[in-house]
Length: 143
Image (cartoon, rainbow, N blue to C red; front, side, top):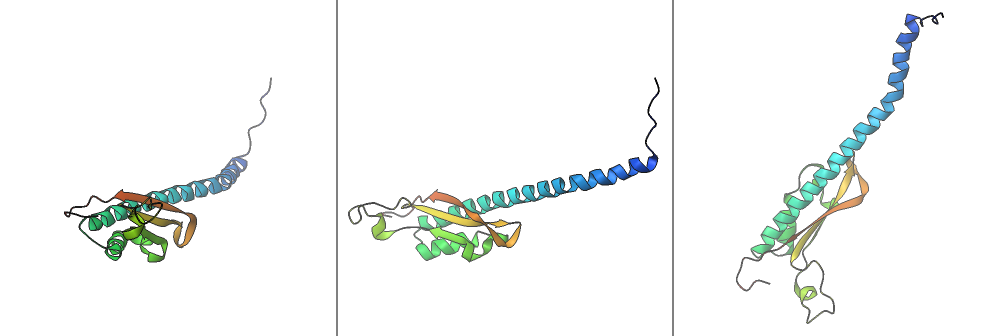
């Protein structure tokens, strides 16, 4: 039985270029997905840190503006745009069961929401990452 003739050296060399061209979109897509997963993870990290910082300020008697300022200052990089950050720290009548039929679920908590960037600053995914931290009041007679 005879073997078929071996392919020419130029055909083998050209097949490498074809294979690389075929795998390149898969490699690029994988890199973009890994980068986006990193951005989502960093968003979650910054959101948690901001909620913790806001709860710390609230615990020593800070009002809503001070809590928001402390939370926003804790966020850095692409995420630091105040338009993409929401800080909730409900106080007052919305937390008094004698004055409202249903108390806000975030009473006694600081909640921070951050919109997740898509690959680079300025373009956002249609999703937010949220973190909620309980305020442990340190002053006597505090809320």
